Each structure stands twice: as C-alpha cells, then as structure tokens.
Amino acid sequence: MLKLKNTLASMIKDAADALWQDNGLTAEEIAAMLEYPPDETMGNLALPCFKLSRTLRSAPPKIAADLAAKIGESDIVEISVAGGYLNFKILPAYLTASVLASIEESGDAYGKSEMGAGKTVVLDYSSPNISKPFHIGHLGTTVIGHSLKLLHEFCGYSCVGINHLGDWGTQNGKQIVAYRKWGNKEAVEEGGIDELVRLYVRFHEEAEKDPSLNDEARAAFTALEHHDPECIALWKWFIEISMQEYQKTYKQLGIEFDSYNGESFYTDKMPAVVEEIKSKGILKIDDGASIVDLEEYSMPPCLILKRDGSTLYPTRDITAALYRKNTYDFAKCIYVTSAGQSLHFAQWFKVLEIMGYNWAKDELVHVPYGTVSIGGEKLATRSGNVILLRDLFAQAIEKVREIMAVKNPDLKDSDEVAEAVGVGAIIFNYLYNSRIKDINFSMENALSFDGSTGPYAQYTYARTCSILVKAADLDLSGEASLTMPEEATLLITLSKFPEKVLDAVAQYEPSVITRYVIDVCTAFNRFYQACPVVTAEDEQVRATRVRLTRAAGCVLKNALHLVCIKTPEKI
Ligand code: ARG
Image (cartoon, helix red, strand yellow):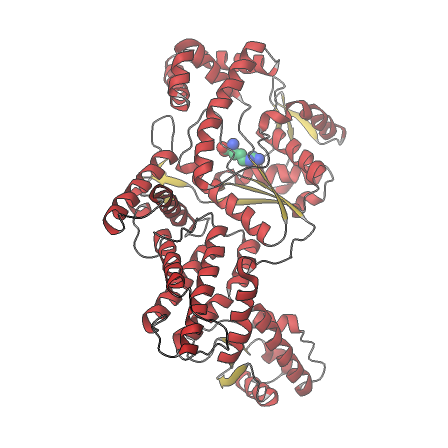
C-alpha cells in the first residue's frame, strides 16, 4: 500500500498544481494525509480535504470535487467524492498485478525494508538479576525486546542483542552470606536456581530479625569488589547456575543474545568514567556521596558513588553506554524495562548529555512497558507472589497437549508443536496490548485460546498450509482474476504489512504487528468461508484463490516471526 499511496499522492499533487498555483504542497505531505476509511464501502483510501481548506482557500467538498474532476479516469483506482473526502477504490487489476505479484515475488522478504542499511542498533533487554528466578515480570522485557530486535533486523539494521545481566550489587553479597550460613554444595547442585532463591528469601526473613546480616552482605560484596578468590568463585558459580535456568527459557522462546556482558563487566571501566565526570566539573559531593545535580532539569540528582566509594546502577549504565558507543558505533541503543525505571534512564541519559555527548539525546532510547501484577498485588519474589515463566509455559503446553490429544491424536512432532503453540499463546497474549498498559496477569486469560489469540493465528496459518497441500498439483500460472469482494479485502489487508512494520518500529510497539495478524486472520477466514478454494469450478478462479491463500500464509508467517511466534504447518 505504500507504493500505491505514493502513486496516488503524486497524481493528486499534479492535479493540485494544475488547479492552484504555488500551493506549496509536497507529494510526501499528501501521502502522509491519505488514510484508511473505517468503512470500506466508499473506498479503500481517502484524502480528507479539511486541512487543505486554509492553504487552498476553498471549501473541503469543493477541493475534493475539483481534484476528482482534474484527475479524471485512472486505471488503478476508482475515484469518488463524499463531503470533504476524496475517496479511492482500488481496482482489482491493480490488486493482483501489484499487491499479489509483489508478495509472490518477495516471499519471506515481503515487508522488509532497507531503512536501516549500514546502521547498527543495540538492544538491551531481558537482563535478569542473577539468582532470581525468571518470572512473568521478565516476560515483557524479554519478548518486547526480542520482537524489537527482529523488527529492526527486518528493516535492514544490523542488531546487537545484549543481556545486561544484573550480576553486580549488594544482592550478590546477600547470596554469598546466605549460602555460607544455610546452604551447601549438594543442595545447590541438586536444586539449581530454586535453591538459590530459597537462600535469598531466607536471607531476607532472617535479616528482618537480625539487621546486622545486611552489614555482612555489604562486607561480602566489598570482598567481591576486591577480588576475594572465594567470593569470586561462589559468585561465578551462582551465575552459571542461574544462566542454565535462563537458557532453558530463552531456548523455548527462540532467543539468543549476542552479548551477555552484564553489570560486572564494567567494574574495571568505571573509575575512568567517574574521573571524566569529575574532570568535567559536574560531580558534587552531597552528604558524602558523589552525585550529578539535575535540579535544573527538574529531576532528582543522579547518584554516581555511594559514601563508601562503591559504584551504583547508574554508574554502570553510563559506563556501559560509552563502551557500547565505542564498540558498536550504534545509531540507536534501546533499553527495554518496566516503566518503573523511567526516571533512572532519564537521569543518566541527561548526565551523558551534560558530559557533552550530544548523541545521548537522540540515540539512547528507553522503551518502557506497564507493570505486571497478580491479583492486583505487586510481584515479589520474597513473598512468593510470582508466577515462574517455566511453570506458565509448562501449563500452556500441557493445555495444548490435551486439546491436541482429542482433536489431532496422530499429529507428527506433537511435542514440538505443543511447545510452539503453548509458548506462542503466552507471548501473543502479552504482546497484544499496547506495551505501556499495566497488566493484571491472569492465568485464565493467558491460557484462553479463543478469539484474538496466538493459537487462533497459528491455526489460521496451518489452515493455509493444508489448503496448499491439497492444491499442490494445480497449475497456478495464468492471469489472476478476482470475483468476490472478500478476495479484494484480503489482498488489501495483506498490502498493509510493510507499513505496519514501519509503524511498529517507529513506535517501538510489537502490538501493531499482533493486532495486524488478527486483521489478516479475520480477512482470510472470511475469504475462506465465502469462497471455495480448491473446489472452485472455474480454473482461473481456483488458481487465483490458491495464490491468495499462499500469499496470506506468507504474510502470517512473516508477521508472526516478528513477534517471536513459531508457525507449525500442522496443528
Ligand atoms: N537488571 C535490571 C532489572 O532486573 C534491568 C536492567 C536493564 N538494563 C539496563 N541497562 N539498566 O531490573
């Protein structure tokens, strides 16, 4: 549809230039004004003429009528006027010759663009804190982040996915103390991350009664900072155990990272950065701590060093951003975290700007998402108000298995399919809402497979595949011909995919894609209900419908992959 929008825009521009001299309108402006009418009976695209009324000094209905008369006949659209709107109905011949042909030609590449060619985007996402279990609070950053990576790659950027592990802080000291007091090697080897969590929870319970444990934890972290070999060995071991657990989840989600350089990676790089902040004259001592004052920007100060000289979360982020800029020369560095961290990012982005790094202003992007709660309560590992991702996925997979055992007991690769559908259901459910919306997580909702869900989308894709298997021997050559309105609507829906990709990237919003997937499913299923495909009598009509089915399958597959969802051919 992008191509058509541009073609129409230049047609309109030519007509406008002939009618109104020096009107100052550009084809780009006109293309941006073209919209999709909510009711397609009038047309598939419309130019609202209201905004033009001032510049052209004429009433909107008159502008529309004049333009229509000037453009006259066209072999790609039928033009009509309704009030202040100039309406365009796309002619079937254009849909088949342009839209269908371009989907068929591009295949897996349909929807791709070269927008980002030669540019690098760094994406910092998932980034769990070591020794904590992976729970639904991490689902957002992980799937939004990965989807944004896939979307940017689809637009030609070269992408670097970084898992900025939370592996350096007092919590690591707490873990060491807890292990020494109440843990042992066998139990950790046996219980893995669950045992680490048990120890962590125990630490907090005991510290309530005996606050001196917190001092011990701080001391253990200081020992870690001073490379105490025993502390380092324990810390490394805890990371390894945590990573084994995280990797299982990443594998189910189909995610790999390009770098696991977490917070600890920056320990030896921070002193130089702190020196630099100091040398630029913006480091202030406040009650013993070192800060950068941000009052002028209506923000609380950014903490750089604690009173005891140890570094903080923002210190590590500032250092990491400089390191990444030097290493990857990024055009953008995107951070995906819950909206609860928005202030943190705004603060340290500003510090870099004050340090004179102008790129920080446009190239560092924080992409926040809404908080997740369960039963209206905040998530909390310590009190147990969490749902672990592995349990959530397991339940979804189990539910799919039960349904499949009834509906399709002989399915080959049923384990793989059940995992793709179960995990896909959870991802789709999460990515269906605009990211900034707070979520009160409900297991029932996530495991409901009716309506606008992942399983519905995957099932629709599988349906396209099974039709194609039946049509395998048909001759699909010859000119396509559309005979039913549902066919045209399907093609028009498919033609919007490249624009949706650009929208999703511009807004950092995977829900643009999930919503679009449902539009495609609806259009395809309406088409399928109204139009017999392999049983259509006319050869030409049959071949066209098979090609439409293949095109719908192609778009569904491309779109679902952009939101981390697999597309089994049989379900
Ligand atoms: N580890 C942090 C957390 O769990 C998220 C890190 C996000 N990335 C960053 N560069 N600060 O809250």
